Image (cartoon, rainbow, N blue to C red; front, side, top):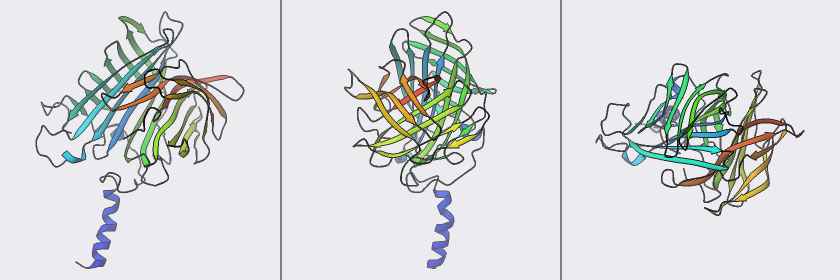
Length: 366
């Protein structure tokens, strides 16, 4: 085989390998298609489905916050094994409820191995994820598409989530048409879309008391998959996903290094009318205002921020300080994630959503 033919074959193979070799290539631009891309992408190293929300509950003046996240992690070392017992994928799940009135965060977690075979086809599996549409099962926890809606059933240790999510707006493609840059190198990117302004119904059971959700309960869905996200110098990120009261949606994030510097930033704003603006690097700035130190991990988290975007300055405040999650028995991380309120530059309360902060207790590893 001639050198020119070898070079030509390598060039032809590169776009195909971009989605198959973890960390080796920059992800190619692609058009996300649904419902397929709402499902699992098993050739990618990391993937998550992430739902957060604000629950108006019957008979209670203070609302509840909730979080449900399913993670998939591809195990590279087992991919060539023929045994049906081989753990080719690992599935993790986190769930939490923020009890605003009780000033307490309740949380739970799960982990299981998965052969990668379709649900129900391998008796050894206790978890699975559909490749056709959203359909994640992890023992008795699930996130499934039922008709046009998503349904989360989470019977956790101290609470139970039985929630249905109805999309009121189209999918929001993050980054450049769904390809979201996450670092200085092109390979630090993910395919990423959101569905903000979800209408939520169902119930939350907390300490044996079931509370029905009322009108005004809203949620946010993120779905993201990648081969390599974090730059080697990155220790974690700060992220907000905010449903604004006027129907618009705000996403903003920054990735930090060990010295607290910003390696990358980004996000987007979509108006209620559907006009979308993707923030370029340098257009997002997180400035900490007030911090809280965890008595458990001793990590110090900024629980109030001023976030500058290309459109406005926003003040983001946690509804309660202690919304730290200890997931060391599943994903291995301690991080802060919780319900927050958002004010604009005029001091008007304009929205609610979730703030997530990782890498403060220890450097995050994906």
